[in-house]
Image (cartoon, rainbow, N blue to C red; front, side, top):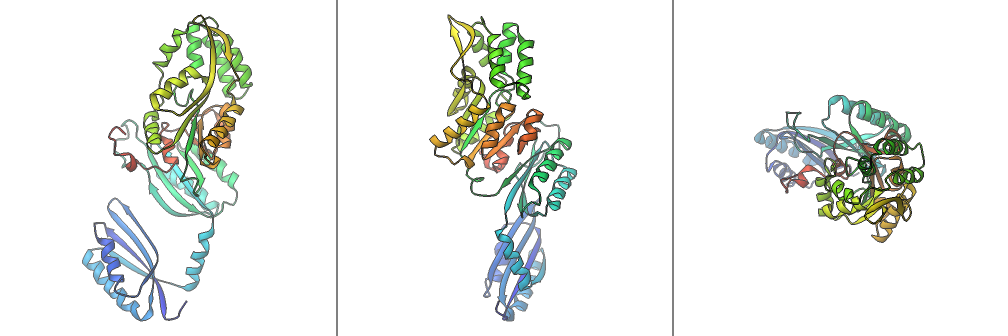
Length: 410
């Protein structure tokens, strides 16, 4: 660097108001100043503004003097820090390092939770560049319904042991009642285009086959097989065949009654509205039944539904199904196929599910999210949501509540 120039970092804090940044930069603009870095944050109307600039050494004294007068006039605090060439070059050298986004989510976020997470980042040699809040301002009454809190940390560096860090974060997630997502900060993260959902116990808070079984009087038998399959203890196709056989003789009209009373998971309406509004393609890939998937498709404008077709003859279920079973392997194949049809890179896809048969598509997708999932699924997923509704997916995609305030319902 030319010895006739100087690097200076200024930090300004105080009550924020319109025009403050313009006033500071106007003072700098009177001189031959190059802005090398600038960052600003506002927390509860308190401004924190940092500017790193290069100026002619002969101008530095006048610049600092004028900035001090301007700060006094504006009623803010200003500090000056000379930066050496070595410090600046070291800072520049860090720009090529890996960048990640760590999203923390819960009904509320506490100092204990943030301390635990940031300590793990520090142990892994990662530096936090920025922190921002994605959720709206928190009500003081924590008993209000649908309260949620989410912050996003921009992180730089390369984890010393990515798998160990993932395990530690997952352990914290269960111990401290919070959810997290750790994603590489690249163009794919900002350009997701296809999202695939499991249906039963994900989009809806029930297993449709269990609902059918209750009406057929075989609820306990079917439920036991379902739970064993979702835990990954028996093959999904085998369990599916066993359960469907127990439904033989059930009247077709029962399916309509169940569909009209499906318990929709918290956050689904908000999530679907936002995804459709921002151009996402949406698919249901379910080990459940097409009849119920198509009902949800009409209700929410879902683009694709792949599930299992029950055989019906003379208005009665025969205890058999038509075509191939949509099991875990098939879900992953369908995810890849739809991505090809929509001309979407697999890194731009998202998959959300709760059961062992969802693991193949969760592993394949660019972003796989276990939702209120079984322990085996959570243990093998990179992201999970257990504390709030399905609209928590929006925060993992980087949406802020302020983006969504245009529609009062949400």
